[in-house]
Image 1 (cartoon, rainbow, N blue to C red):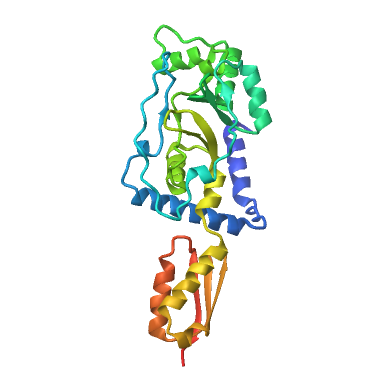
Image 2 (cartoon, one colour; image 1 turned 90 degrees about the vertical axis):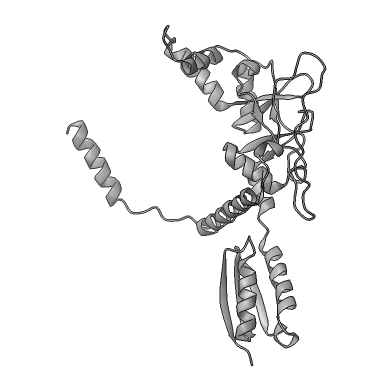
Length: 292
């Protein structure tokens, strides 16, 4: 069998293979992800400021004690909106700029992290070093490849970086950071734009104060079913006449709101329209019968 026939056989086998069975909880996880994506999209649509207002791109600290420029302030969050300082990890795991690359690998393994912020002697975030940076170094060294005289600028930069021995040499700089006063929705938007699972949190001088994880943003951004139910029940109290309120039951599961009982048709239409506007609601099941 030649290479072409082998590839065709593999493709046919994949087409005939039964679909993977969903694991328990798969549907719920997908619903949570969709709710998270909706919240991030809402944050992006409702936020007029550029991403630079939410964070500072950490720069290497100057040799003099002159403080780094203060980033533009993030808009003051509305009451009740969770902010980054409430969900960030403190103290933040980090790597010193002078740490040798073999020790970097040990720290990443110990912290079970794919990347960590790099800080200088004054705790300014000067970059981020990742497993990819270490793997690139090892790959370049093992291959023995050297850029030729007409090699591309990017190839030369990668080769020069791979020859480094410390975190300062290997890191990606500047780092994407977020301010502790930024809202969780804003931080989630910034993480999505930057394709990051973890972001360093810095003060206005660029000093490391914490690290925020994407899953922590997800958990804080999406209200649980109890919170959604409380809001729906408040809507029932506000919209329904007193005689109808006790005839309506509200249940919420994985963001799906289920209404049972009896209600006048006009009132039900208004209530359903209001519930569908709640950002965390995935679906509304109307099981209401006609009111008396």
